[in-house]
Image 1 (cartoon, rainbow, N blue to C red):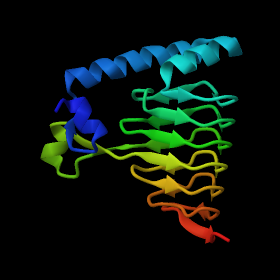
Image 2 (cartoon, helix red, strand yellow):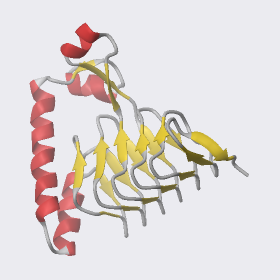
Image 3 (cartoon, helix red, strand yellow):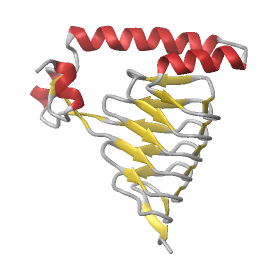
Image 4 (cartoon, rainbow, N blue to C red):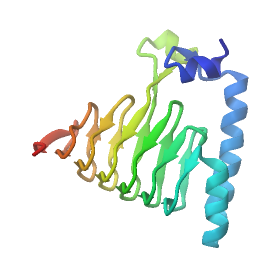
Length: 182
């Protein structure tokens, strides 16, 4: 398996492999062009070229940063406010009608906990899923492997370390349920 295939299979991979570096550099070139575009039509075209799936009436405000772009799927009518960082080493699936505040961060990659492995570039990646009609407050961070259930609310600044049930409201670091699902 290539390092890219290992990454997508959620197996340990070498994050410093030349094939991955080339893909990251290409994505950076594309998001820089998107971030500098002034006209909305041009931004939309550049965004559609950068991310894996951009559906009807979905948009990301610049500036926007990602690792690869191609593993991001943005559902119908979803909106990501400015300053978002989506580290899409594994798929990031964002459902329909999702709203994200400014400076939201979604991480799929995790470095090895063993220092020797970490220094060698060993990393794993786990997908993140945000289901339909979710609201994520500004500055929230979603960690690798989490799912945010349908119509859940993640409070501003929350650090989500585990799945959030549908309809629940979570706040804090680490995020904890403030209001349980109905």
